[in-house]
Length: 111
Length: 115
Image (cartoon, rainbow over all chains, first blue to last red):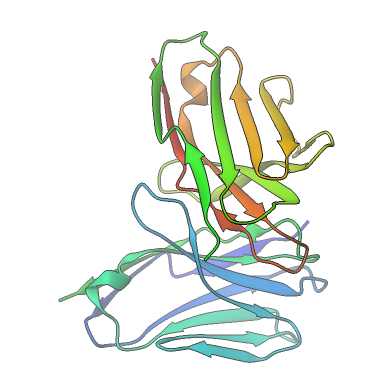
């Protein structure tokens, strides 16, 4: 099955700086890569997703890049704000069906 | 945007009790719903996948007689934890998807504590 590795496990950034989270996947058939943000006591919320026919996608301060050859994808958050503090999960799916999640990254934005 | 409602948000009950958790898609018809389990500071682990009108598909290691899933309509799926024990205490989260091309939308989870 699919195996997704996510790094780093924790990330502390100064407000206004950028945050980058990286994930790798093992199944070359994976073609859908969503990113979720989970706040304490809540369910994950989709923040951005990308499909394998696209190399990059941007939505305001959030961007995701995908390198199919290397089987890795990254989340970039620019101009971080305190409300960006949360746990972020990457995921991969070979069939738009089941998601395999990374272990999560706890992001702390220091004011 | 799409909304998935999960109820109850918190359950505390005695060992041996059966607990039912509901997952509803509020503004779309969910052809597929998923149930996950999350332990503290860990990732989401898929327990089972259910399609409306058919039996759920359970992941390896998940006891289907322990975790009963019913997806009787396009807007409602239920997870029943039967004869719950302290080791079943966890955060249970459902998600729903409209079609194969749509992302999964998650509920806010149910914190289950078995005493």
